Image (tube, rainbow, N blue to C red; front, side, top):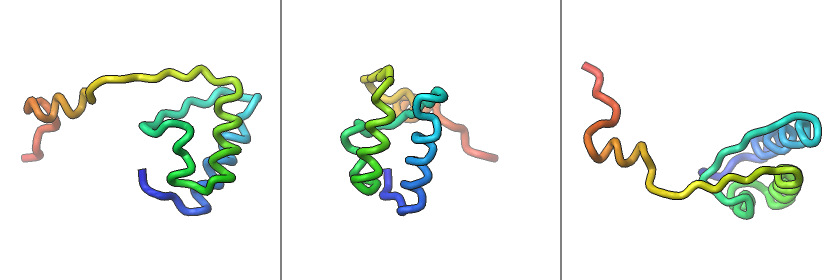
Length: 81
């Protein structure tokens, strides 16, 4: 992921905060929650992770990327003709 601007980081935090203890929120990422501060300000990352993990069910997946395997086997997207 690329670094986000302050506005995007604040928007993500606002989404997390608005749903905290009121609604469900599913977040997927290839970055561990401890690494959110690598692309957003530490204070916002800490607050977002705190709320995300408070009642979370964390599912960790491992293994090779299926998209990468299909692409290298020639079964990926077909070129437009």
